[in-house]
Image (cartoon, rainbow, N blue to C red):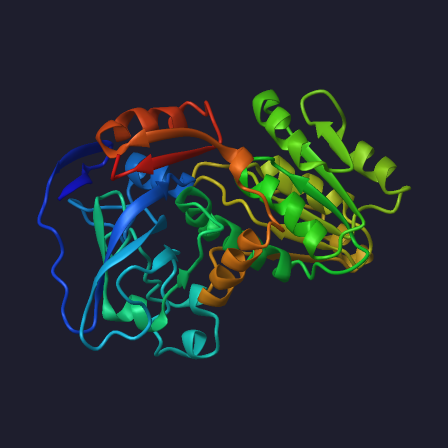
Length: 347
C-alpha cells in the first residue's frame, strides 16, 4: 500500500509499505478520510518521544472495515467507522476509571500505534477492545466523521469547564475547535456565546456559526469587550482554544466570580510563563483547569452529535488532497491558509 512516512524530523515521503496483516483479534480499515491536526504538524516539525521514525502518523480518521479477524466482534466487514486518537491501556487506575487520556503510557493512534496517512490502517486488539472506534451511518460522509476526533476533545474541554444550562461563554481562538465549540456550547445550554479571533480569514469562516458577538483581538480590548458583553460580570466559562499565553492571562482576568477557565490550547516550549496575580483567582473564587485529548465515550458522543446535526463541521473543511499530494496539504497547514485540511488516501 501507499503511505506517507515520517522518515525523520521535517521529512515526510510517500512510498510503498507492506499492507498490515490481520490476525484473529484485529481488523483492517480502508482509510477514506484523514484530517491533518496541529499535533501532526508539531510531530513533523519537532518530533515527539512517542513517535519513532520511520513512522506513519495521522489520527483524525474515517473509513471502511475491509477485513476482520475471526475473534473480532466490535466491527464487521463493511462497517463505516470513525477512529479517534487516545487509546486507554485498560490496566492502570486512570484507564479503569474512564480517564484514559491521563494514562501514563498514553497510547495513541499515529504515535505508538501506526496512524492513518496511508491507504489502510490496522486496528489492533488493544484499539478494538479499549479505543475510540465508532460506527456511523450514511447520514455522514467520511470527511465529517473523521472530525469526530477533534470534536470529542472539545466535548472533554467543555465538560471540564462545567458547561451547562444558562451559562455565558467566551471562546478565544476560532480555529476548527473554536468553531465547533460555538455549536457545542449551544447544544449544552449556553445562553450567550462570545467569539474572539485574531485572523481575519478564520473570523469570516467562524461567522457562519452564529455566535452572539465576535471580537477582533487585534482591534479591540478583549477583556473590556467581554466584560461589556456580560454586563460587567464576566463570562461564566472561558475556553482558550489557541496557543497564546496572552489569551490565558486574559481569560483569568475576565472570568466571572465562581466561573471556570479552561486552558484548552497547549503552548509551545519556548513560550514565556503565564503571569497571573493569584489574588485574582483567590477573590473571584474562580476555577482554572486544563484539558487534553478525550476518552472513547467522548468520541462516540461526538459521532452521534454529528449525525444529529447538532455540530456542523462541513464549513470548516477548506482543502482536500490525495495522499500523493500530502506535502502540499502540509504546506497549507503550515502557512495557515485554511482550516481543516483533508487527505484522501483512496483518491
